[in-house]
Length: 172
Image 1: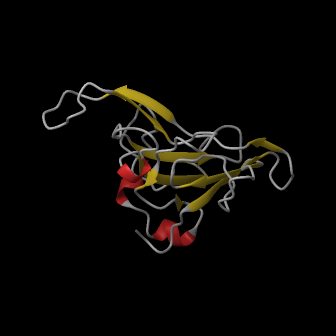
Image 2: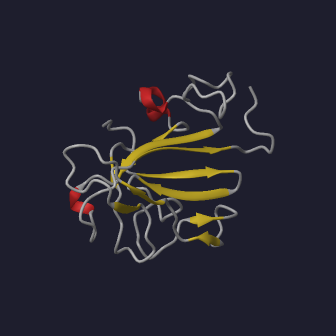
């Protein structure tokens, strides 16, 4: 972990303001409130369009040796509107490419990946693919956050958010 990145962050561009946390919540209150939303457009106004969002996934665990729960069907809720079944836990802090301290200490795993199907070859290997990238890792593997499940699914999320302030995407 690095002292410069944070546990709360914002995607803040193109008149949009969306709070993040490193447990897998997207467009939540960036100050951590559970009663205030976090997705505003246009930014700076009280016009709230998203209270909170995030991934919800399910899968069947592989029949690998050593797992007592092989072939079991399990869900992982990184966002649960009721707040009862959430399973997300941080594996990294939130890194923001527009924060000079974060940018100068950018994690090696946060660089734009070598995937020409998703990214222009001109962007691969850069810290940011947009005017503001945020990057973080989280997972559902902490047994303290099983929230009624017998065991975790074992999902690790590598999340990159990208924001542009112009309509045509990244200009290289």
